[in-house]
Image 1 (spheres, rainbow, N blue to C red):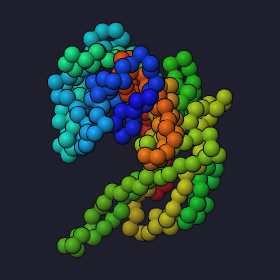
Image 2 (image 1 turned 60 degrees about the vertical axis):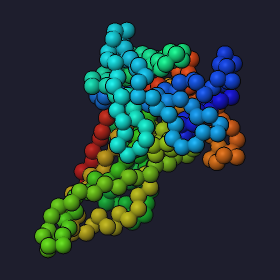
Image 3 (image 1 turned 180 degrees about the vertical axis):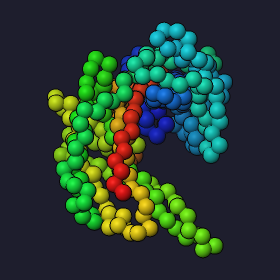
Length: 289
């Protein structure tokens, strides 16, 4: 088994790979999202004694196909705050379309992967287990999202929630102005879901297509201040492909330190390592004040 050095993102077991040359296996990591440009990380794994950042070549050839037709050749963009870069597109991804990515570098074998973007989630119901007026300062809020399912829809869902608050503040010059503040809210449930590397709450839909979980709300007394002018509870609900779900599900099993139990992390890159997945998202707002 070989693990890429990219934050242990991809681990596979494949006896067709010559591990004596594992430092020459290309790695590809990307999750394409509907309505967004593509960003792809291409890297070479580190050698055992190599320190520092992984190597992201700027002269790889990365080509994306949409529904079997050429979509775009991606361009390399150097990161401004790190020593690596990513390959990006100018065009944006469309839900329900299929995408194939191919990457080559030097004389190494071409790597490739395929993914169909799920359709955007369709909500049929959204219910809360408590009235907002009855929420205590530190409390749990049960949430149930009913989702419509069809042939183009994913049964794997990721959700995150946050407060969006407008507050009046007085600056150092004594001038009162409106300031926007956001606070992420953690979710949990009975153990059927899990928190992924992005802090989203992830799970497979139940047979009823209900996605139920709880939000842990803290310091809600602060919202009653006269300086608080607007409060919104906002949810981002994302449909994941099966590869995206399996990657998240296996990634969380890995050891939490260098001496943890080894884990095989889901990969779908032909002739290489990594993950190529897709997601479609919607936003739902609830104005409380």
